Length: 601
Ligand SMILES: Nc1ncnc2c1ncn2[C@@H]1O[C@H](COP(=O)(O)OP(=O)(O)O)[C@@H](O)[C@H]1O
Ligand SMILES: [Mg+2]
Image (cartoon, rainbow, N blue to C red; front, side, top):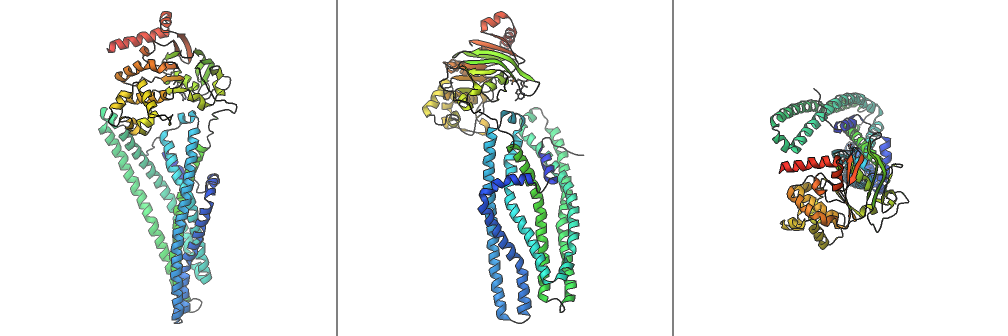
């Protein structure tokens, strides 16, 4: 039985295992990030070189000690060899340490640079990117993938070091005895065959294990996130069974993976022993003729070390694969063109009166699926327009376009503010005059005060309190133990939805914007909060142009104009009285709504 988790984490993992260990595309894009770290890279490299040279000279020094001094009973010379050995050991230690330090400092520099580039890039991406991307995936890219890439620099240095020491060992062996070196190296092809076979087997089991692992983890995460609804739906037992199945499968795959992965190191050790016995067997026959005893001992020591770099390189291979896959995913995001937010000719919008005009506005998110059809609508400065219509009729799209969250393609009509096309206005200055409150209040970490000041960080405390009073939020905030200093827990879980919405109203109003937009801002809140907002509404829209999208038609009756949308078309405009009289969709919605309110009471 095969488990395939949803999402892409498995694809990522498979890509990691089957992917390239060296991807020129990724490396060439990483180089600019490594460049500022040139000095550290050079220092790490130098330290590595010293480390490798000292490391591979130990057996040779021992050989010198034995052959030149011990066998000749040259005790004084041996003292010098001893001193040299200790000194080189010391240099070896220091250089190894420095290599690590320089390499990791270099990596951290790369990481920091990469993360901030990515962060800046994410803030510039078009809304359409976020429409298509899961938060979880993005988070994992920011976190895991950047982390993977961080290792690359250090890994390159370390792997080069391993390669060099491998070459160094072979060179030393050849110098000491060419014949014995060839005999010893006979086991190397066997080792490669072992490693290749092992890799193939391990790959398959590893994939199965990772898939199983991520299925189990996904299942666990879903259960934790949905714990409330699971208990309500009494699914515990069914879920338990399904978790058990997944969990046993995980155990099975883990076991097989363990059998295989446990086999490889002893296998390598076994080959090492064979190589050593070859050295001793053939070497001892050569002693006296073409070989000194010290050479034999050095050989044994070299052979013991020979397999370490090989093992390390095998391990770095998978790490490289992972890093390349991560790099690919990160640069994929980096390659998404940021929205050209402002065309060159855009001007700042100042002194807004707040006349809004939609002219022949059409829009679609995807080709051939029109969402808005030829909308013509005027809102005079200081007036309130209410928009009603069924879900999906295009209300939110209309205001997303007004706030330029999506850019309007050419020939799709225009939106003007005080007669200026909003495509000719910088988006920042446009939004400076607008406040938008969405259906789902979103609070950031920090205090209530921080959240109200989120946009206008320089606002004074008095201004914050004034804004809170305007939206009737002051009372409840004041009654909290820490008042405005109350910290917002994860996503505002310590406040009710209504309270969070009041805070976002205060945030919206703080900058005293000329244009106020409420998109079903009262849809999810309790009736007490709604009352508060209803009462505040007059203050809110006072001397402002307001667009209010609302379900509850009680909010709407007072509006100067009501626009009725249906499937992307604007089908009726007028005030409450007029629309009731004309007996169209508004009347139907109103009757339905009114009835439901009456019944609810
Ligand atoms: N980001 C988006 N990407 C693609 N289609 C979208 C997007 N947002 C909304 N739509 C589609 O556009 C239509 C209008 O949606 P919307 O403006 O949100 O309606 P309303 O706010 O009136 O409920 C719907 O059919 C919806 O599925
Ligand atoms: Mg909507």
